[in-house]
Length: 214
Image (cartoon, rainbow, N blue to C red; front, top):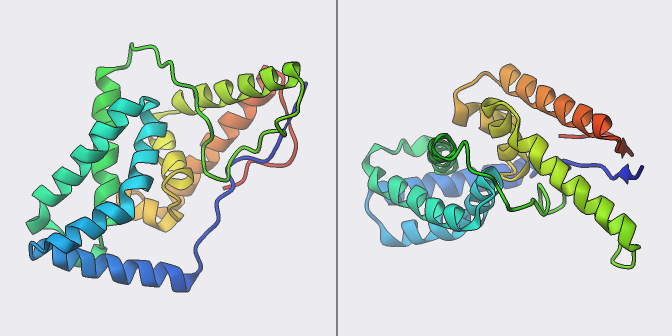
């Protein structure tokens, strides 16, 4: 067996960064509502990578993810007049993205997903160095594939929370606001998901060095 290095490590922004980002989001929301083109460009620039990463991890299909990321921005810009400026932009974008992902998944439930996950987060799974032996590399790839399958098979709400937390780098409070769930329920969903992923690795015969942390 091979030890799995700690997964699901998320670095929280400090309070000053959160406040600065929210302040900018409110300004951008006001600009968007007023039809300001530069605000639209800044929104696209600020959130494209995060939104694309979230959708791509959800669907595990790069071409669909790129198309749906574009669609999410178009939907946001098309509904500019309905944006509540005090909520900023991020919640709107991720709500749109989640709905698009759910709809796509319903259409593609029987499609075999061929793309393996490279990692759940930019600083997620740490692979052994490149000089590792062939057998160990094969085992690490097997673990990545198994992780992808476990996440993909989570109940819809749990998968939403895990990917928003890991890929969207969203605090639990922000996830709670976006999904319309209580903070306690969001943490409950995250805890359930982590338990299932941990149990899945244990059942597959992988050991865990450290804890799954969120």
